[in-house]
Image (cartoon, rainbow, N blue to C red; front, side, top):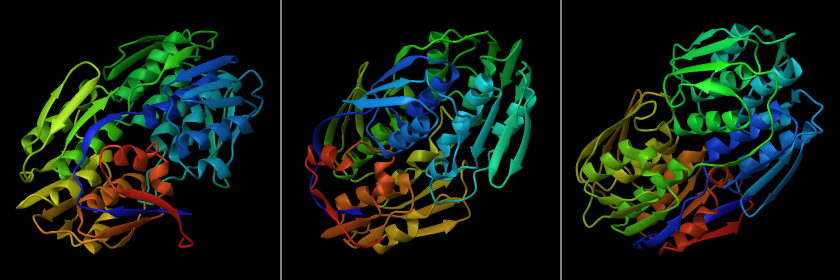
Length: 420
């Protein structure tokens, strides 16, 4: 197992190329199950989650090749409709295969998912959507068992906007007989990209990018090539890292339109920001101004930057509040930040950060993907040396994060450790 050793106190300055979106990659990889053929997904990040999804697809009979961020998948030989626990337990996004398997094979056996170690995130919205399309579903020994002779279009309304459930319903509906209308659909960029790939495969979808999606089922879909979108969470993480070190950064291969809420808050905290079509520029000269955030569905502040913002506000001289309305219990990074000297009070789903105190290096432990990022960011500004354990969490969603940060002035080493 690996850990990071971080020597804090260095200023970050330089340019970083942003990788393809982790969350989008996993949805695109699931969509290839809808039709036999050879697919190329360009700009795929080299991540543990991508490897996990690749193993799952191979287990179903697909041939997968990954080289220099080009993912090639041949689904001609897919002959299994089961997603076993050994793969799905590692990440929730594996549950995306439910819709495509049902649409293509008329049946699916998918393990209830695992993923980050914080709080229950039920899959009932996914299941109800499949039932609306005519699937008969039971849960047996930890597996969702779904069957149908033929999916049929229907009205699907989500009481809560859900990226995963929207993606699953969207994929299943492409091959359903008749018309499906999804209301209160998620409008995250990852869903828009998924819909655009499905259209390239031959699907008929109206309302892309809006909360109402209308899908006219087709008899057959076809393989295609598709370019993944930039990772907006990685972009936000590096912008925050530069701001924390009073640095200057240029992000390449990103999309500011996916990040307007985050960029607005960074400016509110004192950052100077500019951008063009594929680049974002940030410069920070002073300590940040205390700035509250409340996470919400897109286009609001994403829950996936809540932990990083908490670390950022540790440097602000004053009090700030970070409220997560998406996942109320996503705060396992806070006790670890306190080991570095953070002064944080947690009241229900709000972290009250009393900033302006010097952080000191310590040994801390990751518990989830974005919490890991917050510990790394805090280590960059802590006095002395910080050790971050269980960094396999960070490898799930950030492509060689230590190399990218070191390239702009950080001092991070990845070393082996016997500590579990």
